[in-house]
Image (cartoon, rainbow, N blue to C red; front, side, top):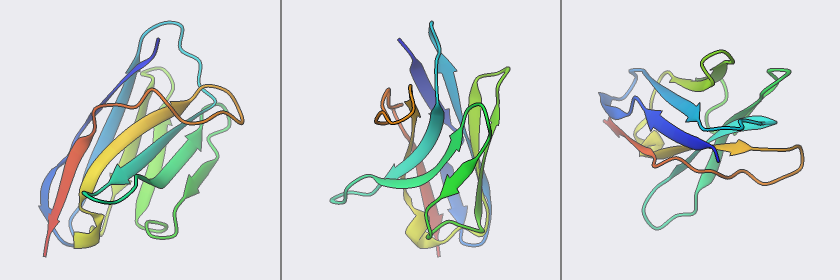
Length: 119
């Protein structure tokens, strides 16, 4: 069973940057893709970005495209989310998840890390 642990959240001013990390542990580890999602109170969890584990192809939501970058370190089994030019509306709990096989749903959610952007 795969366990995911997010880190790197915090409180920052608008316009600044943060980098989130998501480390995967457990055996066996098999992933077609890793993704970042975020959720604010009273709203559904929304997709932020994802990366295919083998090819490195990335996908972004329109709200973060051009500001956020997802990357991975295969050897460390870690996925990163570099967040630049942060806005107050980026405030949320950020979760990572894994898609074990192509076409399957994202799962094995981490505990989340809080990102708060002040204006």
